[in-house]
Length: 202
Image 1: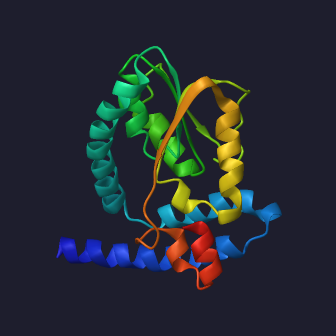
Image 2: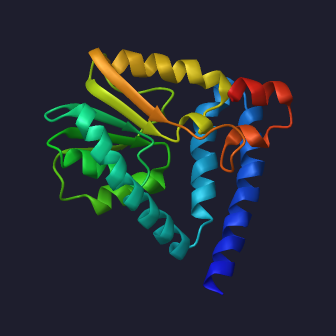
């Protein structure tokens, strides 16, 4: 019965994301900064505490493996920016490799939870910041990483995001990102009814 409830909740969240994604895709540039936060906070706040715990545990397990791979590239004593840090698990694991990590997310709920979960870790700083406008000085980080951020960006904001990442990276810095392929569930592109928009985003 729990699995059935979980599946129903997931389907409800997907339907809501469908509606919110269309709202985001239609939003003009002047409204989009606030719209990102509104969309993802609303989506996340509809989930039950149990569903959030399940999500958090799943992300924690995958973050451990991801961090092991990333740390081989990052090394130690580096300044790292984790874009779309969510629950903060990946930021935590990267910080354990003797790195200073700044985790950012547009979702204030996520940032609050991540800050509370890892309050005792001095080498992590969590901030509410949007990935399209990074509130950091030029050449602030040795390494930037994002997991499943690109598929949530409005197509018109992808270039802005990449320009901002390039700006905050030090000379010789590295940006590694992972993203879902187009049309997978959870990908904002799949919800657009306009083929041109879907192709641009994908």
